[in-house]
Image (cartoon, rainbow, N blue to C red; front, side, top):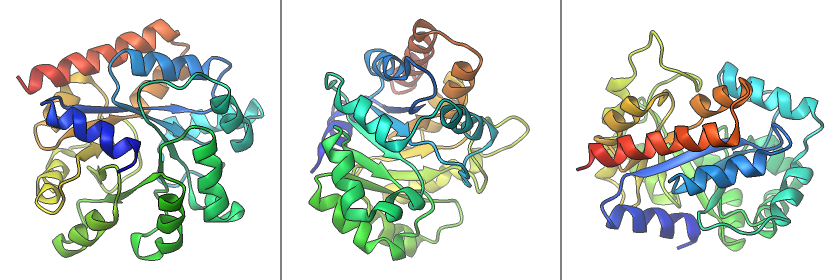
Length: 262
């Protein structure tokens, strides 16, 4: 097992609900401080979004965050270089971006670049599992956990197949929609897919999309091994939240999750 699966599996074995947070690489000068603050406040892993000009699965908040990073001149090479130059923390890092980034470089080169920068895992949300063979092999060769995704519409047999190929954890999209707050949207029924998915894999199963507040994180975690929180944190960053503000926000999520499992 690579670092993501090892760390998240250890959290689950210790009876702790898993919290994965997210920061858009290059969103502002102190973005690596945001990453460190998330880890220190209780995140078990942190996704790093590599900015992309057309993030089709991301809602307006992550789109705005990507646009802000690109406007500052952030590139994948710059972001990876900044990660290479920082002191390695205790929690695994997961690169999340679109297939264009990986296939423009070639999956093998892309995965080696991630590993060299200290990345432990990778997610490409627009790459179908059935077409991901070369990417999955490249990730394994580079020592990365390549995580795959399922949705509320994924049939059980397909969940089983995807879960068998996923590494690190299985990412459950709670709704057939883009990322972002769940205001005016009932996606709680989608959480049930996590319970179905857990029957098909020994790996942690995490719910993402629409987890926009501590109480929703706690509620979702009762159906899975933990949650992924992205847009809610990036909204605060875009609104000018300080590193301390983000630390408190992650600590609140951590506390709500831990209370839910007591």
